[in-house]
Each structure stands twice: as structure tokens, then as C-alpha cells.
Length: 235
Image (tube, rainbow, N blue to C red; front, side, top):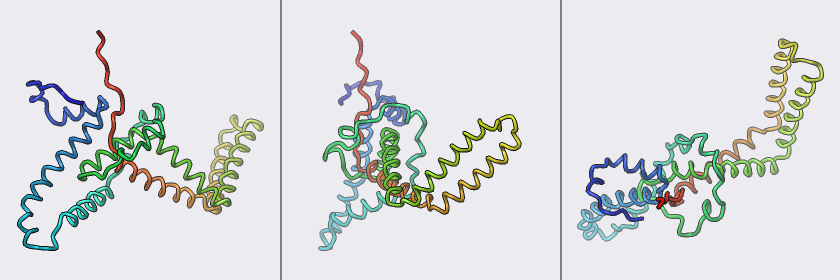
């Protein structure tokens, strides 16, 4: 997308312009801007290090790019990918798994800077929130398949609460709030014992770890694309 020259655009602050791009759905431009802003300092550093590289035969741009890439990945360790996630991100339609979520080989690239990596993670998590939630459910189902004892414990807990709900209506426990509250606490304790004894927490932990790794890898390397079509002016 190309913008026409406009003298008034010089008065727009940088954060306001980036906010407009984000709200309008032009995430691809944000990705390109963060990449170009990171390329300028890198070019200056490469120009200043030409003399040192000429004197040192072992110095090369390969090691510099490797350390730069490692620094970019390490910067994501302290990043919370869900910090900007809202409930509205789950209310829309699920993006296409093939065209939008997976994409093609050109849809992936290594982030040029930690700022670009953080931008990609936050924006991709918001856009593909429903896809990542579906992946977590899939990984959790696979973990339960590999741990049938945990699956039995989970089903037993669900059956316990269904029986409690059925008995509450049959015995009229709604009219006896004290007894009902005591039975609820007993059912909670029994449920916790069943889940811990059947090792359900390990299945949840494994699903969370695999889902988090898949989320971070995909959100970091997935290029930002146009999230919504631009509004056309009516004639």
C-alpha cells in the first residue's frame, strides 16, 4: 500500500500514526516499518565494523547475525503474549487455517529486531486467538489420549458434578442452602482428590507447555498481514 504525499502527514506523531495503522488493520505496514527501523542501526554498525572485520580474518557477518538472532529470541522470554488479549478477540470469526493461519512459505521470516518480534507476537496472538485456543484443546485431548488414567479421572469428576446437579433438583436442596453449601464443599474436595490422584494436572501442564511453544514460534515468525480489508469510499 502506498500513501500519497501530503504535507499534513508531517504533523502526525509517530505513535498516533502507528495506532491508526493498527486500528485500520494495516498490520503488514507496521511489520515493514519495524523491520526498516531496525535495519538502519544495523547498517550503521556494519559500516563501522568493516575496518575491524578486514583486520580480523575470523570476523564475519555470520556470527553477528547469529548473536543478533539469539538476542531477539532471548528478549521474548520475559514477554507476556496474552497481555494485550481481550475478550473481543474471541468474539469474531475464526481465521482460515490454511490461508490465514498457516499461509505459505513467504508468510514466515525471522524478526529483524526484538521490537518487531514483540509486535508480531502481540498482534498475531490477538488475530489468531481462536486458532490458538483450538490448538490447546487439541493438545489437551492428545495428552488425555496418552494418559488414559487422567481421562478417567476427568470423566469421573464431570460425572460427580452431574450427579450432584441431578440430586440437588431431586432432593430440593435449593430450599436448604446450608446443606447445599456443605455438599458443594465436599464435592469440591472429592473432585480435587480425584484430579490429583489421576494426574490430570500433568496432562494440563503438558498441553500448556506444547501450546505455549507453538504459540510463541508461530506468532514470532509469522509475518503480519492485512487483518481486515480497507473501507472503500462510496461514490
